[in-house]
Length: 322
Ligand code: SF4
Image (cartoon, rainbow, N blue to C red; front, side, top):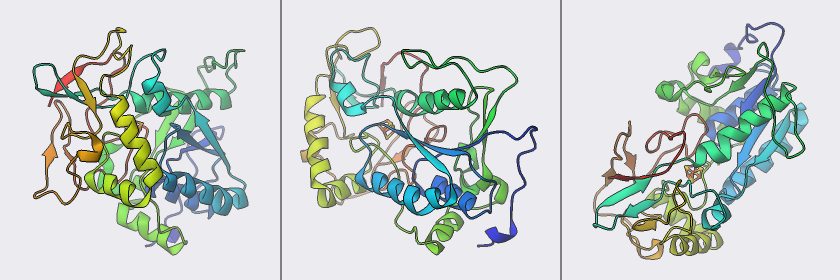
């Protein structure tokens, strides 16, 4: 690891932009926080963690460690943002509609999957709202945050390593410019992990919701064997979603078919999560990459960089054939 020799210059925009980090408490974004705290990268003004309300215990523990051991001593603010509670909202008949990418058994017996909108709803939108607030946008009485003056923008670091450059995406708005310091430094995921190891932060897990349908079999086993409370929550949630809820789709109509957390379309506590006879893959319609259901995505759910499943749709929800 040679990060000491790769100090980045400040972003070129003048006057100096607000420097933000999209912090997921996984390997790459945690490394960016450490590098800023250690002076290898420019000083962050804040790091924002978008909390879905049902993150894994390891994620909250990692976040606490980062805040107390890294951010506070360096004078970097960590802000925890919440747009709701993804578990409660999915079961609430008064909620807008379910946004999680649940597996569906259609009425004709075919398999499908609800299109993922949760990353946008519970992560990207609130990260951007916080960016607008930091840029001086008006905050209304109901909590909504207004527009940003055209000339203003901030820089948002996103943790993408050089071996995963294809995951780098624009923010989609002019006032938040996504930047990828690990790409600029040419650091791979292994480099990044080595850097964390050197600084006593070896046990980083990927950030994801406890009941995320993208969870791999290894992830489900970890939950069952090491986190029985969260496993029971997921099993109970899986039972509760079988018929969707009273407003299961964007049109407010009940779900057609049955919803499951596991791609086997079996109740989670009966699903074949133990040592499958062979590695199985499921390719979603239109997805760039298949999800490995044994090992899963090493990085979990990341705003702007989630590589699991089909890209999000701006509105609506529908079943797709698997
Ligand atoms: S971890 Fe899964 S359920 Fe949670 S926001 Fe990301 S894609 Fe959605």
